[in-house]
Image 1 (cartoon, rainbow, N blue to C red):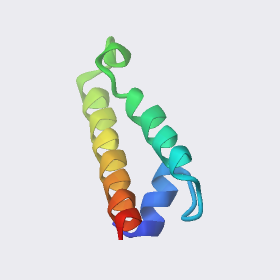
Image 2 (image 1 turned 180 degrees about the vertical axis):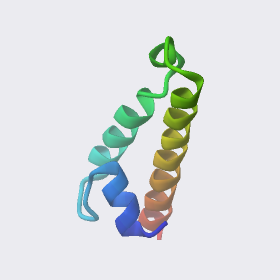
Image 3 (image 1 turned 90 degrees about the vertical axis):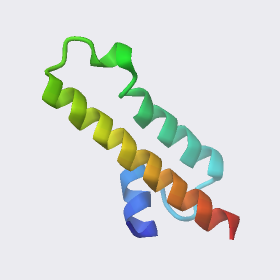
Amino acid sequence: MSLDDACKLLKVTLGSAWQEVELARRKMVLLSHPRHLVGMAPERQEAVRNEARRVNAAYALLSAARAK
């Protein structure tokens, strides 16, 4: 995943404040919390979990780029 892809996934820009990136990640990952998955079909639950993994990977990439 490129930095641009990570930004698109988190709906931020490379120039965004770090707090904005963290907030975007938290909001997106919160959707995969178990209490939000109740009543969903197992396939949909897995899709939501996979999206949360992608969001976390994008966040990790941006975090690593920020540390440089």
